Length: 301
Image (cartoon, rainbow, N blue to C red; front, side, top):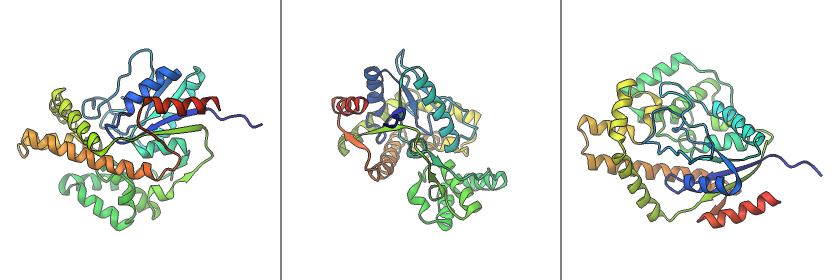
């Protein structure tokens, strides 16, 4: 009989579906450690807009507050860091729980993606960053669409950093990084749990969540970040900051700003679900009890 691979529990779902609460609950139930798979929560100082989770002691959490907003953080780097965090959790006898809404991060780890090794093209990046600042993200998306029409359907086109990287890779190898990736031999026995929430309930949660962000200091957080970093930085393109920047310039009222953040969050959640629905291995649950039953059976298998 072959030896079982190390266990890895993965929690996925759209923004505001309750992933974090479920992950904390399961960490308590199964003596786990959390490994965040969120491309925004890796940035220090970006706390309110990203709804960062700070789990109660003694639950350990990895890969939050990893780099500063003016530093780049690639999928490949996340894969390396996540594997290190997962290995350290196993060494402590804990169950690693990979949780987040960034599909690229999740699959790079679970499927052991062999990503194309295209080094940064600083000249191209400077040009694209200048284009982003002068002509806006839609201009870059059109450039990417010309290089590969399929690309715009496969990545988060609201994420300037991902669009710039996709253009960079496409320009170098005539393909974009999702098509160029290859699955490697898996390192884990992974169970993927997805949270399903009724659309109207999810939208209402998003509205309350965004309102809470404004009450918790999203405007002040944005001001502080803009005093240190230009709005053209890829990290500043995350939902919340561009909209609040418009509010600070006076082009949006506070209510219009809130509504815009809610709308963009909902649109992003739909793109997230486009990813997850393609994965037939995800077990969709509606609550904690249902998730526990599947996990107990998987652990005992």
